Length: 205
Image (tube, rainbow, N blue to C red; front, top):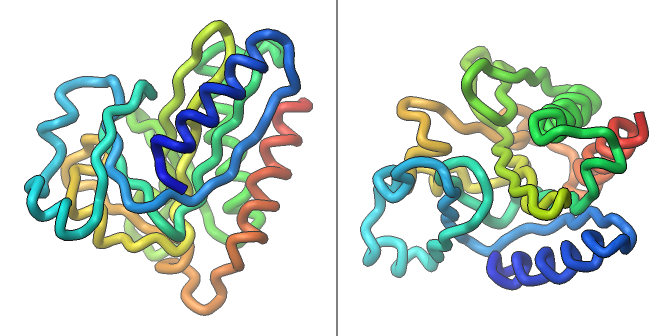
């Protein structure tokens, strides 16, 4: 799904949720796109030229989420929870930790060890012996309601991350479930089920 199209859907649902409508959880895979967050000089973390990106068919979009620069594309599960934080007694920091905890729980269920790293929002794994980022998180809270969310690499083309400095972290490695598990990688439907179940359990608690 095109990133801008998904963003427009989020905005429409956000308006409904802010007025008391039912909370929603959107699951998508985007077509190739690099997005900039609102933090710092993120354009400096784009390594590819405009011509190279056009040849590869990779869009560039300036988003209003938090965080730095990241890549979205096929084989990556992107999750957009649109919820009222006050209804769940969540601060912004608490909400980000909830997202992180949900991914850790889901990856554990899928057989991949995962953890946080100090000073780096998102989820990391040492499943192949070296620390690498497997999930990026970037959110926006407006009128007490969340937008944007998390991006978990399942069968993502990791070479696309060579176009950027992922999340502005120089020297950081990026990985995916497929890189770690190979033929044992679960289908996207199973990964979706694991993430949704973990999110629901944590939101309820």
